[in-house]
Image (cartoon, rainbow, N blue to C red):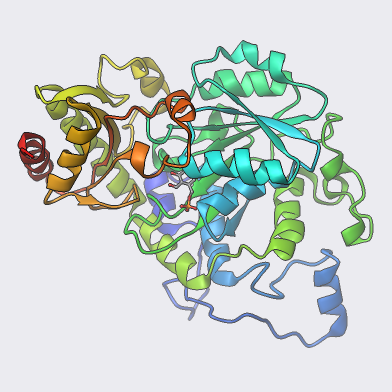
Amino acid sequence: MKNYSVETQCVQAGYEPKSGEPRVAPIVQSTTYKYDDADQVAALFDLSAVGHMYSRISNPTVEVLEKKLTVLEGGVGALGVASGQSANFFAIFTLCSAGDNFICLSNLYGGTHTLFTSTLKRMGIEATILPCTIEPKEIAKHVNSKTKLLFAETLGNPGVEVLDIEAFAKAAHDNKLAFVVDNTFATPYLCRPIEHGADIVTHSATKYLDGHATSLGGVIVDSGNFDWNNGNFDCLTQPDLAYHGLSYTETFGNQAFIVKARASLLRDLGSTMSPNNAFLINLGTETLALRMQRHSDNALEVAKFLQSLDEVAWVNYPKLEDSKDYKLAEKYLPKGASGVISFGVKGGVDKAKLFINSVKLASLVVHVGDLRTHVLHPASMTHRQLSEEQQIKAGIAPEMIRLSVGIENPKDICDDLYQALKAQA
Ligand SMILES: Cc1ncc(COP(=O)(O)O)c(C=O)c1O
């Protein structure tokens, strides 16, 4: 599948039935797997054989999605987990322990922000949050002997800032850090961060991969490219006592990271993706290429329309020619910049809420990436737990609306937004 184009990979990668097997990857609704020989099971426990043993750790339906995302992102292995939150948590916790720290750019999804600054902090892992406008070469000033990785989103949520992946990958690698990129908004149809130097890619599969707002899920993809033997990652090179002292790098080579994430973290934490969710997310991913192109084309049309209205103070969409990120978008997102737009309503918070309460076709939901159009007010919703100062640092203005443009007819979407912007209190 590696040599096929992305449209074909979306449809077919991950599952190649043998003669007489179901054409559609089936839902394997079984927690457990039968073996004939005690030594076979012992070998699975030792990680010296490959196979399913218990669905907390792996499952054939989840495996189909993992294989699909491995191909789509161009990695060497993937792990499906219960949600995007779990994916980001696993990516960090596979590499960081209490006393370690990592660096991330400020324009994060609100849930990622609280995970990093609250829950990980309680576990003794510090996040150094730097402005997303920082020059990549400045990263070095914030690195110490306990810094393990750099984390950023391809397209920020909700500001849709475009990440200069190559520049930040270089900054990470110059400082012996792994570069973890959350590719939820772009998806591998629009951008493959590994091709630009990312080491680990994470997804909230709940968004565009599913695409129909049916299922929570997360995926982590390992590029297999990072040199874990650079002296900074004892957690992968030194013996793991939970596995008879094996070293992940010695035993699994360039799959060390993703094997540890599964064998150690998923085993112990159990944030497992359900086979039903994997089935639905896989079904969604089959049409990803069609949907992402339509989301992106619609979003550009809607963004231009919003720009032409007096009621709108500003519009953020990287494919608008006057966007500060236009050049980066042309480089990293040549086919389109996904379906998310943020814009400011003239009249501040009150007008923003009136607008949200007045939409008819679009719905107010706490979600993006669905094939239906959605609106949300980040300051009072997704980013509510952040202080005013943190909101400003994360690029959340009080008048900001996050618009997730669906795949409906763009004229219908524009008409709905127009009538909602004209609404009177
Ligand atoms: C960029 C990004 N990463 C991670 C998440 C968390 O994903 P989930 O809701 O699947 O836990 C989200 C959710 O909105 C997101 O937008």
